[in-house]
Length: 273
Image (cartoon, rainbow, N blue to C red; front, top):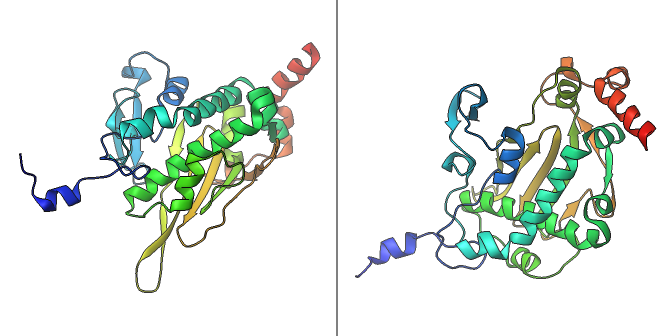
């Protein structure tokens, strides 16, 4: 069978290794979606919807493997599964720890990677960063941006510093935390709109966005022209700032925090220790 050269050139390639792309990365991990919504059928009162365009376009998600929660085809199966498995496992542990220790983390606005990963926290912290690097690279591929060679090298090797070309930051969204504290808001996962930055001649060179789980935000900025990267969680101890994006009406203050059910639960936990 002969494939026309135009079709062959247009066939998507894995942004990581260059092999033919035949796999779609999840925008939201299956384990994360199950943690949010349970393992049962997502129907009726338990229905899950995927919103776009500011919530104007809503579509029901049939399950955690729905195409609605995936990127377009931009990776090969090996890179998306076996090769990046340590990254996915580090993220799973991270989310499970957040859910199990919500009171402490939300009130203290900090966490320690050693509490999540134990003695191997330094290695697992890098694997966690690489999970988000993989996520950002999928966004880059969707926006026709080439992933730089030094970022590929970062994924391939045991490099402990910040990822080149990418800036990452942890934040707590205080208005959603207040809704969680006072109105028992259920968990949800969210990806913000992606913004692009172009050169004067019109060539795209940078994109930025954010992703959320519950009230935790991870903001990211990717620039093919800027080789240096950074994170706000370089060491074991992570101190997180506040941000409010929904409404000032729901912005958390100390009075809300001290009077919340979550704070009462936190005091009870401390008394039992």
